[in-house]
Image 1 (tube, rainbow, N blue to C red):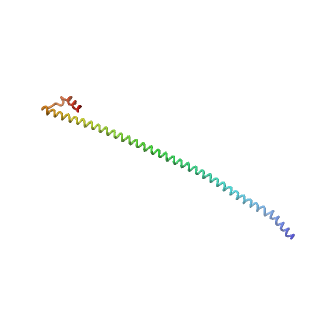
Image 2: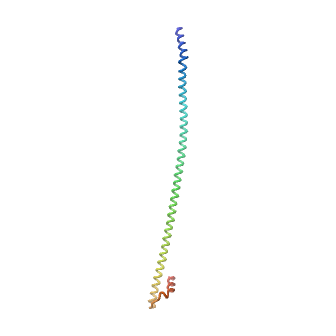
Length: 150
């Protein structure tokens, strides 16, 4: 039993001297590697959370900018529509004014023609009443006065 104790002590000493330190070093290295991996995972999660916040902020900015552009486009469209309406109203007013002027000119022309016809009829009527011919050139003042009265 004494020999077994010595063999056991030699075996324990050799294991403690040659086997145990590399095994502990391997286990420590493995534990350090696992701890580093967990730390990297935590850093990755934090980086991902920060990236998500950045993405959300960028999306919000893009949405706001898009809404502003849409609002600006709607304002521009409304301004263009108002300008087109104003131009159309101005053109319509111009056309109406031109038509009224043409109508007044035609009315004046028709009145002048009617006065001339009435004057001619009056001269013919007077001619028949007097049974003699009235000279239109000689009585031009009288005829123009008659035309203004009509």
